Amino acid sequence: MSELGTNNSSIIDEYQAAALVGLAIPELRWFSRMLGLGHKHISGSSVRTVFTYEELKRLSSEAATSDE
Image (cartoon, rainbow, N blue to C red; front, side, top):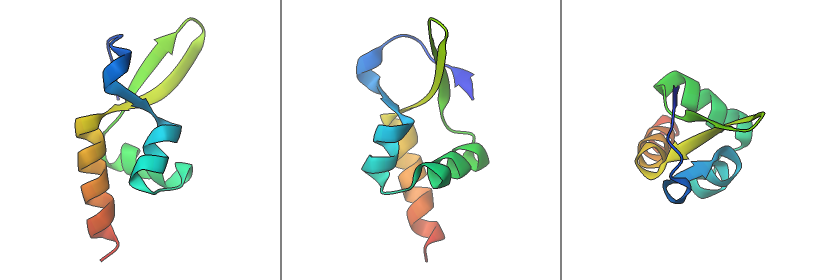
């Protein structure tokens, strides 16, 4: 995971991402690690994992094919 810039309109946090792709948080984190998707977003002393829409598209596609 790499660090992402501060354009908040193009990033989705992991809770929103999980809801959008229909995965539980642990499953989303697993796919994220396996696929190398997601970025660390640092805001003050808080660090959270966020995704771009393009990453969510890829993650969703991979998750769908793994169900087959």
